[in-house]
Amino acid sequence: MDYDAQLKVQTYLDGELPPSEAREVANFLARDKEAVALLAELRNTRQALVGTEIGVTLPESREFFWSKIQRDILFQEKTQPAKRPVSFFTGWKRLLVPVGAVSALCVAALITLFGGSPASTIETAVADPNAFTYHDFSTGTTLVWFSYPAEDNSVDAIPPATIQ
Amino acid sequence: MTDKDHSSAEDSKLVRAAQKGDMEAFEELVARHRDKIYARAVSMMRNEEEAIDLSQEAWVKGWQRLHQFQGEASFGTWMTRIVINLCLDQLRKQKRQRTDSIEAMDEESGGVERHMPVVTINPTAGLERNELRQRINKALGQLSHEHRTVLVLHEFEEMEYKQIAETMGCSIGTVMSRLFYARRKLAALLTDLRKSD
Image (cartoon, rainbow over all chains, first blue to last red; front, side):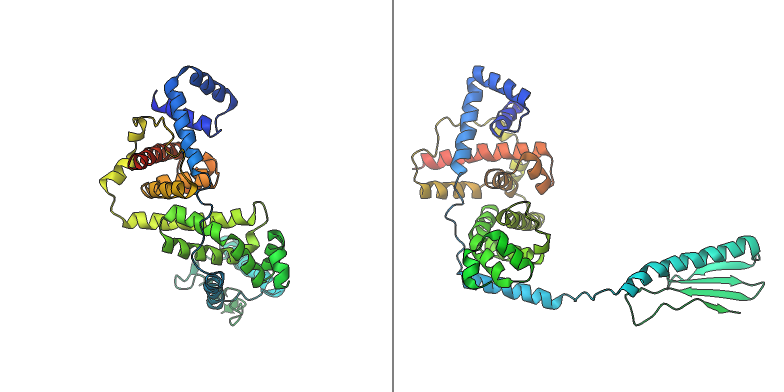
């Protein structure tokens, strides 16, 4: 009996064969003594394992075991930072600030393409990716857009500053 | 809920209370299911101290994730899956740290189970329950953790091949091979133990 046939016998025992294959294995078992013996061995092993975990008890008292769990739960709740509730206004700021930044970029790009001079640049400081700067050297205009994370309420989003 | 209410309440009621922050309700759930969770951890880890630690960790995680429990499975089953995953993580860490023996590598590569003679006499027939459990435990301890895990998940957790494959992060074919090896090896070990009587 080859290995694939042996695995098929196991799969048949475990009820994981589709009906057509299960019938094939049943027919095979009807004529192959070695397969029948293997099936019996697998079945005996499976039967031997039934109830092995019954009667296994945790060797600590209810109170002691619970005290450790409770201590860990309270410790973790204490050490994890409490999530601050997000206000409605803060929630909208989170959406509007990036939308505003993209709008400012689009406006700056349009000015450059259709109204700006070739001598204009848009740049983003590597150190502060939340700041966009638009220079138009011909008109001497500089547009700076700062956007900061809305959840840091100590720093409100600063409206764009136009420097001439 | 009072203590008297807790002890007589069904699991579902205790879970709902615990989900609202009733730690006494959760303590009652721990008391009811702690042995089962511990037994599963022992089956997988084969070490009582590790099993206690992992059980404890599982309960803490259970409390933290209680809001995710929707009642699709029983609470005991849900907790068992948590401890199984913790055991699997721990076994993977240990495997990375362990130097594999030649025997372990042979077992991993497989093949020997294909040629083992079939055990024709039931090696556990006539044994008392306690004696049988001791022999099973001894034999399980001699399997590699991959083979033991597949056996535990299939025989004790009653998972199908596909579920075991997803849990262990391997193919269904690998599950079938490991299960076959584990069963055949177990039969051979139980026979050896019987012969030494």
